[in-house]
Image 1 (cartoon, rainbow, N blue to C red):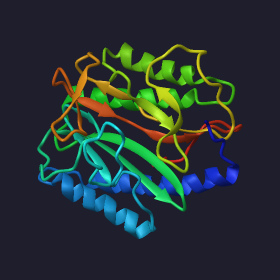
Image 2: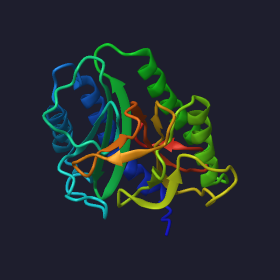
Image 3: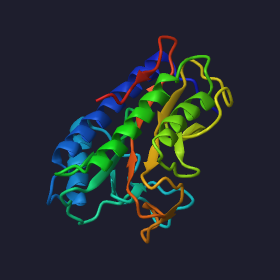
Image 4: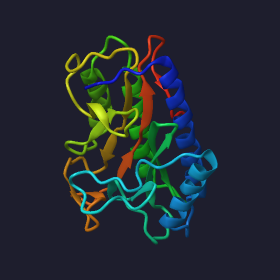
Length: 255
């Protein structure tokens, strides 16, 4: 069932979303050569403490997971697509890092992600990240009252496929509100004009993921959480929490 949020609830979700925005900015600024993924997780925990917020990631255990998620931040490096578990790995020059973070404040959740290169950026990585961000913008641009979920999916998929990139099969965005994952699902590829009609008060986490090698396959790493490309090519991820309103899409996690 899809819950339509009131305008007051959307404002409360914006407050949660801005905690997410501050944390992602702090983590992005801290991500440098020699910094460990666990140190980045501590940066994000500090933002949560300062805001009086909690993490919807920490302890989260969906049906596929062998153990609860042990961190507040997902850190996916190079060929890792999403759900990367922070470890003692220290970032190296040229690494591609995707950062996904959520915060819960006063009962409402925000969720967002970005990808960056550490140190010297490779041109092909810059293009991959730019495409993920452009696909996100395209999806947000179609998130308007009267359109359908398929319009968002089609917009995202068109950008990703035109660039020659793969899209992880079966993964995409989702509704969000009191819980991190709510109805409806938001695929990253689909047919325009299909699916649920968008209404004022719907809030969606829109999150394109792209695989540089052009294939869609992935597998879980030994930790049971991190999803890794089958072809060992690099991946990028971008995400915002977006409210559908009569005035147009409102990006609640805007940085």
